[in-house]
Structure formats: structure tokens, C-alpha cells
Amino acid sequence: MSSSLPWLEANWRRQALDWITDQVNGAGTRLAGEVEQPHIQWWSTAMRVPTRDGVLWFKAAQPGGAFESRLTPLIAGLWPDRTVEVVATLPERAWMLTRDAGTRLRDVQDGRVVEHWEAVLPRYAEVQMGMAGRVGEIDRMDVPALRLAELPSMLDVVLLEPEYLLPEQPVGLDDERRERLTVDLPAFQERCQRLAELGIPETLQHDDLHDGNAFLRGTDHVVFDWGDACITHPFHTLVVTLRSLAYRNGWEPGGSEVTRLRDAYLEPWRTLVAHQDLVEAAELARQTGTIQRAMAWSRVVMQMPAAIRAEHVDAVPYGLRLYLLDGPWGTWDDGSF
Image 1 (cartoon, helix red, strand yellow):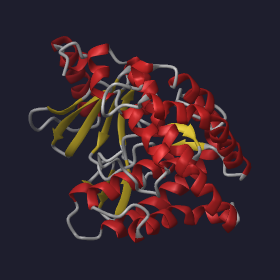
Image 2 (cartoon, helix red, strand yellow):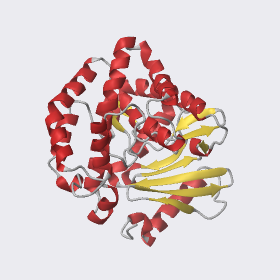
Image 3 (tube, rainbow, N blue to C red):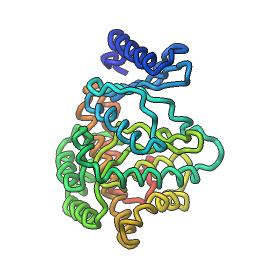
Image 4 (cartoon, rainbow, N blue to C red):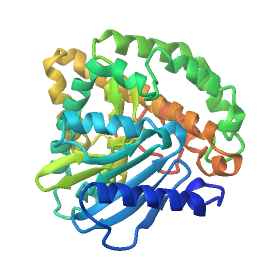
């Protein structure tokens, strides 16, 4: 990891620790040990802050992720039982201090993976439904927008950028696949249009909801780390969630576990959409959401310094290859395509 990252610089760390200490003291408690920094990536860093009243977590993001320190308090204020408790924020520096969210579902070893996610997904869907009426508000927070109407033109631009397609590498998108996507663009645009016509409002979408970002806090299931969130079709959430769960748990893509969780997520939406339209929307979102996730990555890697970009740019062609594969929910790249 490049030493040019701000969170590895002594002056930045000193300022962050001073702010953390001030917020801890202002919350009526005191530090109870050394502040550790277990998470360091280009896009963000996290510090574990032990206090006399329990563990807090400090997060800092790149400027493009500053919206998270505005968005998380909004969600926490509306649904305190569904996300992390915010202690303090400094949005102009993309800093946030929160209470410990509980135990990551990745670390819950009770053999009830499906049952936990059957609890998480409908609660999260209800948050999305509630946030649909606040899209203007979160848009003003600079939450990125990857709306259905914009995805075809975004894909068109990316297909003209060989730097992000890695055509000469095994993990890349070769010329034959790029041509297939180019020919498919009109059909992709039709899918986006049809999905929009089905009447499910675009809203907040987490875009990185997996078992490292969902927690068990007492009896509540909560969602944290909104740093990849965007405004788009809500069903796109399932692209990352079902893919990551199928991969980590060895589930068959499109199998019974995957289908149960898809249906659990869709259940709250039945109050808005007729059953046949809901089924059609989910199938379309499997395709459009795969492209949306790849486009989200393309935006991120374009902001990275060249040396760091090289470590992550393969996420763009990865998603494009998955779209071409057109496998069922939960499909991931096992290296065979």
C-alpha cells in the first residue's frame, strides 16, 4: 500500500487522534487503551477506539466518500435499530466516529446463515422503501447516482477505455467480448427502460452488502459501511449480496439458499408491485445491476493514482464478463470464463 495515503502520514494521524480524543471526552468517557488502525485501503481507513464505555470506531474516507458521514446519521436517526449509532462526524474531512456495531455475520458461527440473512434483507428493503421519498435529500449529500437512464451511456464510455478493460490480461475483457457488449448496448438500454417502467422507485442502494457489513447487535440485525452507496434501482443490491454469500458458503448459483434470500428481500416490495411485475423486475435487475456494479467500480478506479488503480481495475472487466455469462443470481467468476 502506497505510503502517500493520507492516513499513513504522521501529521494526519496526529490530527485524527486529537479529534477522536476530543469526541470521546465530549461523549463523557475516556480512552481506555491504544487506538489501533486495522483497516487501510485507498478509499478509507478505520481505527478501533477502546473507551471506558465500550469500543468506538473511527472511519475516514477519500473526499469522494464524504457523503457517508452525512448519510449514516440520517439513516441512524430514522432507523436506529437498523444501522450503527453515530457518535460524531466531521463531513468536511469525511470523518465519522460510531459505536461498535456488534458481531459481523461473517463471524457468527451458529449455522444459521440463511436465517440471519432472511432477517437482514427485508429490514434493509424497508429502509430503501423509506428512503425513496428522500432521494432529493441524499442527492444533495453527493451520494453518487447510477440511475437506470444513465447506465447505457456509462457502459458505452467504458467500452471505449482499454485501460479499464485490460484486454491483454486473463482477468480482462478481450476484444471479442467487448464487441459482444457493444452489439448488446441497444438491448441493454431496453432492459433498463423496461425495469424503470415497472414502477419500483430508484432509491438508496448499499452496493456492498455482504457478511462483513451486516452485524448482529443483540437481537437486531444492522447494516453498516454505506461508503459504496448510490442512488439506483433498489434490487441491484442483490448482485453483491447473493454473489458474495454464494461464494463464501459454497452455494449453487440460483440454488435453494439463493432463491430463499432473493424472495426474502422481495417480500416487502409486494406492497408496491404486482407479483408478476416483481418477478420480471428481479430478473431484469440481475442483469442491469451487474453492469451498475461494474460502472460503480469504473468511477472509483478512475479517481485512483495509477499505481493503486492497477490493483483494483480488474473489478470492471470482472463485472462485464459476469453480465455476458448471464448466470442466475449468485453467479461468480470461478476462473473458467
